[in-house]
Each structure stands twice: as structure tokens, then as C-alpha cells.
Image (cartoon, rainbow over the protein chains, first blue to last red):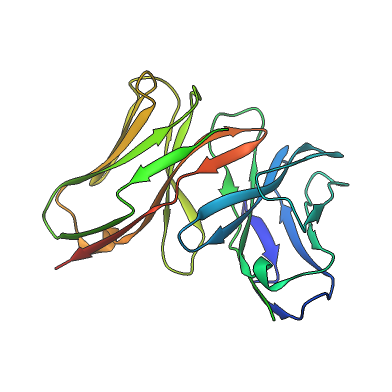
Length: 113
Length: 110
């Protein structure tokens, strides 16, 4: 089944403890993105990647890092999480050769205490 | 800076009624997307609108795009309870991802 897989689905952590949210897609998509969703703010883009080793900042990149060493994986790294990073996170991917929309993962609900 | 504005942000309506959600965007993007999100769930793609005048329909939902006015609409016909959800429009969709509106929280009451 074609899909975008995020792990974990739920995570509670403490301030300052480094964490990684993984994202993997099995569709050979070139484009991948990370978003955070907060009540009243909709979805805001954190980082995006056009292909392997090509990443760039989105609208709200502060406090986050990403890497794209393999085409299928696009992990989101929080090196020192803070409570304001408590949010619902989505990874998404798209084939560069088609005009269709992004496919989204199931989401990761992160709570930083 | 690309901006996408939806309205209304909250809509409560009765079953059987018609209504329209509006989505204005601030650049000349040729692509407009509509997604549906149920509580606690991910985003489900509803429509992809790729050119001026595009109209797509699926069941009781119909989406249209006017690139000259930078406006897309999502029209709900004879609403039913199962359509209760949050609806997002988004623009862009290229390598640099999507820019979303804040979403329209739709409640359809019997």
C-alpha cells in the first residue's frame, strides 16, 4: 500500500530532551515536507525537501532540523524541545512528475512538558 | 509572502441546506487543493484544481477555481451529517510544499 508512515504517533517528552520524528514514504516521491498544526493557526510548513540532500526552511523552522540522506526518509529533529513545540505534526510527500497533491502521513502528536 | 485566507472559519448548518466556503490566495499559483480532516485524523485529499475555470465534483461537494480573482470555492449541496469535518484549502503544491488556510470547521446538524 502506498503510504507515508510517521513514527511515533504519540509522544510525551520533557523540555530539552532531543527527539526525532521519523517519516518514510514508499512511493519514490521526490518532494517531502513537514507541517505543524495548531488550533486556530491551521497547518504551517516547517521544512521541505526537493530531493536527496536538498532541504530548505519553511515558514516556522526555528527549533527544528531535518535531513534527507535517502529518498524515502525525511526525519524531523528537535534537538532541544520546548513546550511551544507541543503540536500535531504531519509529514507529506509528492511525486515531482505529477500535478497532484501531497499525500499526508497519519500525524504525530507531540507534547513537551 | 503567499497567504491563503478561508472564510468562514466556523460554520454550523442544518442538514439539507446549501453553503459555500471561500478561499482567497495572494499569489498567482495555478494550483489549489482542498483537503478534509476529521477529528484526530490526517488530511484527506478532496480536490486538485489546476487551471482557471476548473470545476470538480464529488458527491455533494463541488470545488471551483478562478485564478484571475485568486478565489476558489467549495460548495456543499444538501448537506448531510457525514460531511461534518474541517476543510482546508491550500495553494502552491510544488517542490516547496503547500500553504494552507486556517481551515473551516463545519458542523452539520440534523
